[in-house]
Amino acid sequence: MKLPSYAAAPVAAALLTSFTGVPGLPAAQAADARALPSLNMEATVKAAQIDPRRPDDKLTPGAKASVLLVERALRDRHLLDAKWVDGYFGTTTVTAFAKYQKSLGLTGLAANGLPGKTSLTKLGAGRFQVTHPIVPGAKVAVDGGVVNTRTRSMLAEAKRLLGRDLVLLQGSYNPGGDPTSAGTHDGGGVVDISVKGMNAATRTAAVRALRSVGFAAWVRNPDQADWPWHIHAAAISDTDLAGQAQHQVGDYYLGLNGLSGRGPDDGPKVTIRTWEEYRRR
Image (cartoon, rainbow, N blue to C red; front, side):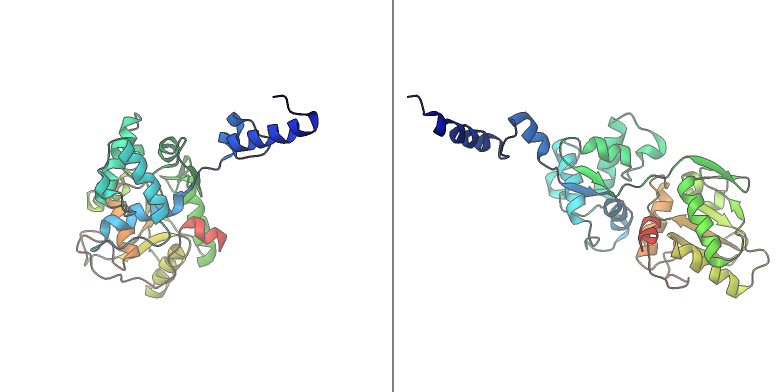
């Protein structure tokens, strides 16, 4: 039966809508128009640092939805058992994510189990879109050492808040450079800062400034280990962090001092923020 001209157009439009869900859009374009779920990289990386250090199975606030997206994608690639798809980015998920990174041909710090922008984006292809990205940036020279541009910016802001210079004793990306550092300087985001000329109050003020801009930072003294007085600082959520530095950051969130004995935090109390959160405050 041929429909009259006045009825044909509405029927055609209705049929198109029923196939695409979007009036007037061809089916191929309709698929592109559907928004993928968003994965918050900041929340995901935060969970990947904290969860492996927890004594319980409490989830990192605000991270569950994003972590589940990662875990489901790893499960579907047969890298993570279904029982671990729980929104908790513990050691099993970290190991699975490291395997995924290696499957991409990534090595070294790019396959450290901490979700980086490149690996997250590839994992999410056709499944989720990455928002709130974190990028450490290029390596640059500071005080004779090496840091990345994110760390350099954080140090500059901490100096501004403190109102005085901060001189590096040791930078980042320094594998084996100091055996007392337990590998924390092997990756990015970690620095040791001189306290020469600082009294106790100034040392504390320096740590407070560093913590305020997104470092997990502590004053270290010779009574703790075979090292001189200095400030140790690890940039929270730097995706180039070495494994031991990741642990220090997780412990900082849990109120600990970042040392192997996992004692209580002995630094000034500040609101814990990442560099990205500090910039948005």
